[in-house]
Length: 330
Image (tube, helix red, strand yellow):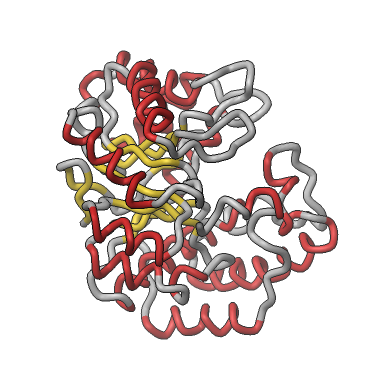
């Protein structure tokens, strides 16, 4: 079990982006019920964002959390809250010391009465040395503004540089059966060697493995995914065929594809000694949270069978698009 900000966490967290970063936010009571269900199950790592909102509703994601903890103060000491910030209006990284500290202070203001446990720049500016960025964040730890430091969407090389000058507690990256690069690009190796917990976002391949699009031949949504290459008309149907193979595997095992996806992620702790992983599936209702609360793990043979499925399939399209990718894996 991983430890962050002085608390034991896991084995699975809860991503909160989909509560508020959508045309119409999830009703508060429904959102609160989802958070409460996760915390009651021991899934006490909550992943939020300073910018997870529509422009007309600034910091709504944080305000939801603040209201939750005001209503349920008994969960204040149970939850570990990680928040991404330091992003400009055009979603470009703001990695200078003033912007980093301003983001931390703004998050703390909106998050109260909950303290900011883990802060992470959502992206880092390639023109600012990572050593300078983490030195600024270390000062925030020393000042008691945050308890732990996380990075997001950095390369293995950048993470290694950061760890050389400051303790990095976590790194958030995309990892799923559709996005497997972290196990081959050095990220898992560096994280394991330096005791960095790896937070895995989009563990269900942005919905392909969560049942969201079963039976669809084209993407019909109006959320952020419509801008991602894997959801374009020329790629969507091909990626659905790959997800169908994983659904068939899950049905033979009597579980959901989402549970297979989580088990596949956690199996990698066996492959990389010392590696600690926390998948953070998003869920906007208690029912969706409960779907992930199933004790299912893969045998070696089952993992190898899934690997054969992935080896024979071709995931079409990049995981983001040309605009987004320039600030990823920096």
